Structure formats: C-alpha cells, structure tokens
Image (tube, rainbow, N blue to C red; front, side):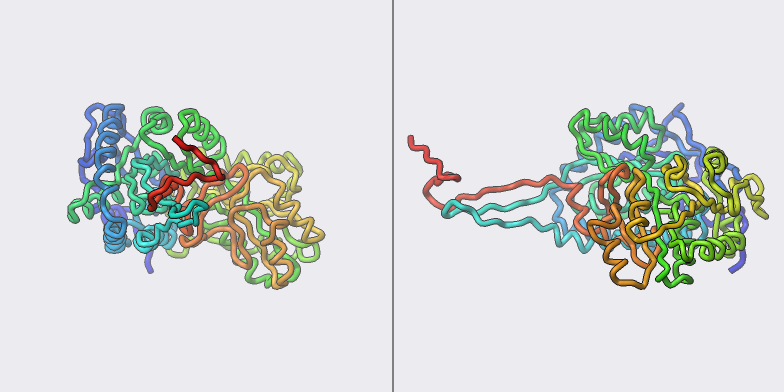
Length: 517
C-alpha cells in the first residue's frame, strides 16, 4: 500500500466534518456555533500543522447541553432496553461504513499508524455490537425472603445524564466504551473530548446524532468540547451528573475524584499505568520479543497499557535485552501514514520534552542507556514530534522507574526467582496491566494467583497492550479501580434498587420483629 500524502489524507476525511471555520464543537441536540467563544486548534503531530479549528463551549453552551441532556434522559429511560440496543447497533454499522475515513482522521489527529487508527474505529464497532447484545441481558437477582409470601429482587435503573472525559491517545474508542454501554442502560452522555483531538469527537458525534435522528429517537450523545476551566470543572461540580468517567493522568484523576466526591457523586477513573512484562527463562523467547516490542512501541508508547518495564530472568536477561535492542534499532520511526512505519509521533512538543527529561533523569539515577534517547528525524514529516524508541537498563527502585512516562521508553531489569520478579513487578504505585511470558504452567498460574500480579489486567504469553472489549477494563492502586467496556462493567452506569414485594394479606416482619397495633 503506497504512502498517503497529507493533502490526500486531509481530503479523504473532509466528508466527516463541516467546512466551516471554526467547526461547531458543541452538540446539544443541535450544533451550536458559539459567537466569540474560544477556539481549539487541532494540530497534527505528524507535521505540527493545523488540521482545523473547533469552537469551544461557553458557560451558556454548557447549560444548553445539560438542559437538553436531562430532557432527553427522561424520554430515553422509557425506551425498552432492546430498542436502545438496536439504536446503538445502527450507530456501530454507520461507523463501519465510515471506518476508513474515521481511522484516517484518528491517524491525522493523534499520530497513530494507519492500522492502529482503523483498529480504534473497529473497537467502537465491536463495543456497539457488544452493547446491543447486552441490552437483552441487564439482569437483576431474585432472592428468597425469610418472610412468607414475600420475594426480594434487584433491579437496575439508569442514572440519567453522565459525563465522559476522554484522553487524546484513544480519542474515540474509550468514549464508546462508556457511551454505548451507558446508552443501552438508559443513560444519555455528555462528552468532553481531549483538546488534542476535537475533530475526531465532532466526526463521531455527527454520525451518532444522524442515526438517532433517522430512527426518531431523542438525542443521546451530546458534545461539549472545551477546556478544563469552562467544561471540565463544571462537569465535576455538576450535581446533575451523578457519574463522571475520566481517563487521564493519576494527578488529575485524584483531583477529579476529590471534586466529584465532594458533591457525593460517583467517578469512574482510568488513570496511569506503569506496566511490567516478566520474561521467564522458560518462555518462548521469539514470542516474548514480539510481545514486549508491541506492548512498548505501539502508539509510540502512549497507551495507558504500554509496557514500560521489562523484568527478565537473569539467565536470559543479557541475550534477551540484546535481541530487543536489535529490534528497537531496526524499527522504522516516522510518518504514520507510511504503511512501513511502526512508531509514529508523540502527541505534542510537551510530550517530547517529557521524554527527554525522563531519559536524562534515568541516566542521572544510574540507568544505562542501551539505545535511543534522542529526538528522531522523520523522513517526509518535518515539524512532527518524533523520538527514538529507547531502552534503559535500570534498577527497580529508581524514582523515574516508579513513574509513567507517556513515550517509547522501556526500563529493563533482571530477576532471580519468580517470587523476586513478582515483588519487582508489584513495587510500583500503578496497577493497570501486566504480563508474563512462560511455557511453565506453574509460573503462569502463580502470576495469575492472588500472590501474583496486583494489576486489574493480567496476560500470559501476550503483551500488556491490546485488551479486547469483552473483558472489564481497568486497574488497581493509583490506576483508579474503575472498570469499563465488557463483562459487568455496565453496572457502573446504573443505580441498583432492591425491591421487597409482599403478595400476601399479612404483614410479617423480618428478624422476628412483631408490631401489633
């Protein structure tokens, strides 16, 4: 497949967006073009040049969105859940029809490779199908009562309007995890996208809103692009949003949790990861090399599930790191529109500076730089934000190793026994994703046990990145503890109600209590 030019790529995605400048970044059931409002400039990290401008929400725009969302929520909650599921399924199929253009827009706006951009759109499609099936499985329990002619049941009701705040690295997929599941439960969704990726949010919202209109349903998916002070703070403090789902850094996530808890609201947090991969001497080493490399280099190390620490058994450590270093030096870095490129740009200059600072700190703290560590020159993409994939031999207790750096930096360290490996692995404050590469059943089962990985996601003979939508996604410790996407994560978007029903003519009381009047 030949490389696309930036001009051709821009032309191909233009059908997803309005030609106006700036484009409306607020959808309240209608597209709101704020007069005099601030604008968000979307820069492509591929070449550092503007892709377009989006008008940001003003305080009055936010109120309009919220008012319409609450009105829609009353109607949407009364639509049968399977019918809600069919609407989401129709949106998923419309996303499929625009998959090529949407995937390309993701690549242009956040720098993912072509296949990763397409994969993100496929993830939205998949979760749409999952949600449609789930709409017929929103089960509650029925429990025996100690009182005669009584029964007890649990049922789940929509929360109403919920807020979803997403990060740049998955500019649409993470929204769909929340939005599609919440929608089949009966909620409506107000989306604040990352200011690094407003165009993707506008395009996705346009598709979803058209489908809802064509089906004759109320609008369910609302958009309020804007900065933290105008939109984000209002969402966190707004008692009309019983749940705010936030994806981002650990420091910001702590602040989000405090703000939302201060009004007795719920927060669903997907925060940072400092993910480790353990490689045993009993591993299939070729498989392990590929798994670690993909986990560390996909999306230029800008996934919350990116592999950041390699913990290899001391008997194979040297040879394995040598093999991995060879792979790192051969990986093509550059314009992600080139099908031969595996590592695209970082999102912006601030990310480049963070990468360089981490490399410097690692060496000052005693780390040994094996490869990389510098800004990369990307052929055909001047002005972009490219860095070299980097391997640093490190000690587990180095302060920089305890942190998450959103960049393709891999810290490597040896271990003696499996118990030692687990201790190293768990000795960081984050707890999102983990992996072990081994052909030994006992090693694998130990890593999966309560004495093994302390992360929310654990993988055997596959990397830390690339989770499927069917399992609940989320982590422990400072990663936040929330769960999104599959399994029973839908319960986060609903309120549980326990109902006791007396179908007799007497009034027996629980616990043997009597009350006669």
